[in-house]
Amino acid sequence: MLSIISSVLAVLPSTAQAHELKFKIEKCGCDASCYTKEVKSLTCTDSDIRFKSRGLPHKSHSLMKGITASNQQFPTIHDHNITITRSPQESWLTKSTAPGAIGIAVNGVPIFSPDTQGPMQFLTGRPASALEKGELDECGGHAGRGDDYHYHVAPKCLIKDLGPTHVEVKKRPIGYAMDGYPILALGWFDRKNNIESLLDKCRGIYDSKKQYFYNVMHKPKWNILDCFKGIPQRNFNRDLWKHRQDRYSNEIIGSPIAFVVEKYQLKTKGDHKCHIMTGMLKNEQLLQTDMSIKHVGRKRGTLFYCNSGCYGQFFEADRNASFRGRVMYFERPTDNCPAVLGLAGLPMFKAYEGRRQLQHRGPPPGGVQRRRPPPAGPRNGRPPPPRPGDTWPSRPPPRRWP
Ligand SMILES: [Zn+2]
Image (cartoon, rainbow, N blue to C red; front, side, top):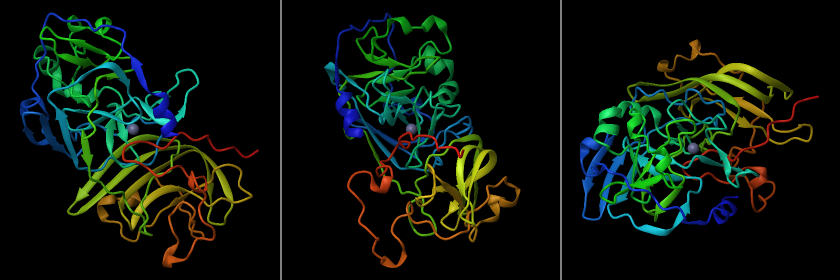
């Protein structure tokens, strides 16, 4: 799917000429005061700006809240190593943004294209937007398949924190694109700086010193940049990360479920860290311990993860000829739950305690051979292996029982 998408999203001819403004923006990529405190180890060479971040915004930002389509991921600490070129190369052809990373915000949180990796939409020729699919929180971001928090539209909470002096008076960047050009948010606080009608098709423009920059949209879709004016840098971000593990030492990569997130919190005490997300399960078929199936709609509960002996998460059940459509089950080991979780006080989904489900849980224990080798392509109907970053491809909703 990804190769089809990237071949279709090829280069676009550059036709529209960018306007030029009468004022200049402040280039301050090597100045620590241009970033928030989440950015660490800022250094500049003649050619590059470099910094590190853990990929999480300021703790005052309400992450994940407002999402209506969840993939059961949590925003976790990452190890982003960012390299931004100080000499962006303007290309004679603009390049369309493919689903995935397109830049970095000045708080060290990656910025992704608005489109997720679902199927191509007939009308747009692009995957559906994360915003329209209800995948984004109130700050314009979410945690992807690698439990990596990132923005898909303008980082609303960050721009609010940076404030009018940074954004409008000093005209400082709110982020950098992968091609090295700064991203600004002119017009967010001060309508006199509204340059929306002057932007080129990539959402870019030149200042009075011929410095090109992108400008994010202030409502209704909060677009960041719609194509690259310059050549995207291949070494822009190196991220070392590890998936969470389940009780069988398999990586947990949450199957997508329709879950309206009401509240997310990270509780920490000593070495314990528990991710807790409470919300409403909208519409799923759930496997019960007695192997019957129950259709569940509008049920409040909690997804959580503390460690490989303490988590509550939905997984897809093994396929069965008697199942119609997808069947999920809720796995809830609590052998190693720290008191900080406060499990007793959380609304909870009913745990499945029947025989072990294997299909979506990696190899069986003890090195036993699979009954049959996995076919080529999507494995046993599973989605392709994850890449760091984004959500699962969209899947059809489960069929209802008659
Ligand atoms: Zn995403």
